[in-house]
Amino acid sequence: MSYNEKKQHVAVMRRRYAGMTTKKARSRVLDGFCELTGLSRKHAIRTLRKRKTGSKKHE
Image (tube, rainbow, N blue to C red; front, side):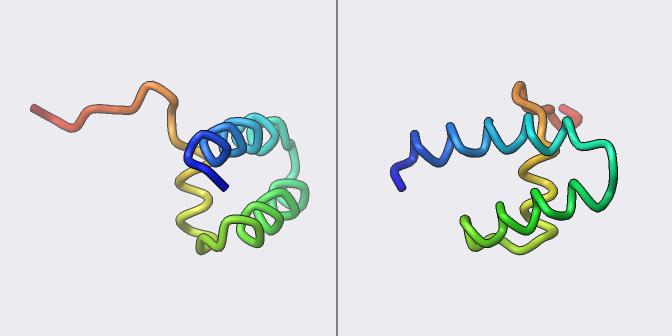
């Protein structure tokens, strides 16, 4: 997967993950994402919940 493909896939999965209303549904989406990307579950959760604009730390 190229960088742009990964970025596009994360955007699609982020919308799908955000649209899930039950914990069981989010878990299934997360399992598939982890399997495809090889990320740990915790890292995948942080990736999928991250804001697009990025938050700045205290300056």
